[in-house]
Image (tube, rainbow, N blue to C red; front, side, top):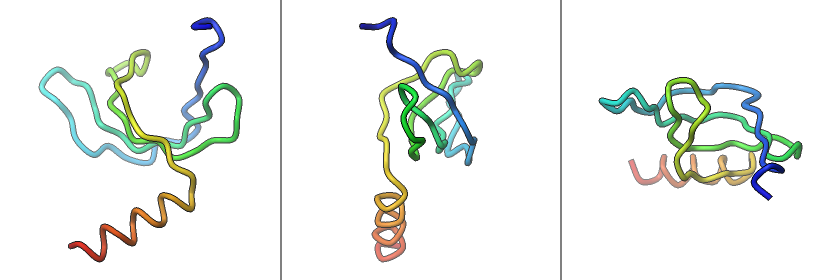
Amino acid sequence: MADDFSFEIQKHVGILSTSKSGWTLELNLVSWGGRDAKYDIRSWSPDHKKMGKGVTLSKEELTSLKAVLEAEV
């Protein structure tokens, strides 16, 4: 099953933070397993070959998150 795992970063939206080890927490548009791309927040190694756990959001979910954050700040 691990061989079926594939991803493609279609657009780098932005870096949210960088750790001392060089890993970055990023917002990207990612296609997982050849499916339609979704917005994704997760940590990435400098070469983008390794990744940490993250969250994947549709455009609608990202818009809702933005509204919640704007109301909170």
